Image (tube, rainbow, N blue to C red; front, side, top):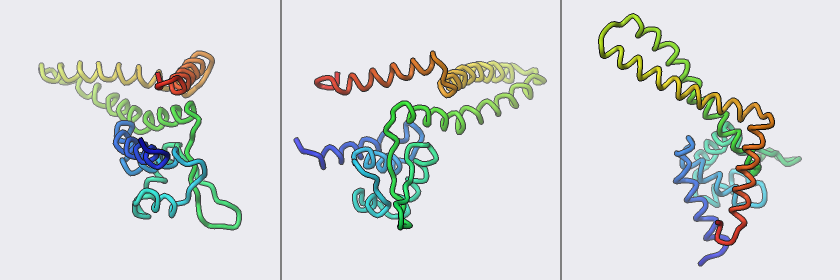
Length: 180
């Protein structure tokens, strides 16, 4: 079994494979994994060198991660270089992911559904009726998810405690022998 370099490499590869599941490119996932495995902020040159990625790919990945609220850039005094640091507060990272997915996916979906369903009400065919019912069911599901997302993002005692409980459970399970 390897040490730091092997674990860092495996973490980077894992984040690269999993990134599309939460809506980002594999390159952004690899950059995030590298930043998570680093104790200090890293500039684009350091990311290029460590990951073997092009400067353009690293820049795009960092912009993408910043848009998700998962990294922030720092400009050390007296330099033009920007160094990147990951968000390591799990609660903050979860809220950023939910807010971004809501903005990019659920909000546009609801907007379209609210437009399409009324347009189908004038249609009398069986096919239009089936589609209208399916879209109404989909709207109900998306509204439920959207409501849960809003509760999480608004904070308040119940959602805050729920998220804090999830984060504390994750930390506790991660520190237990064998990660269990």
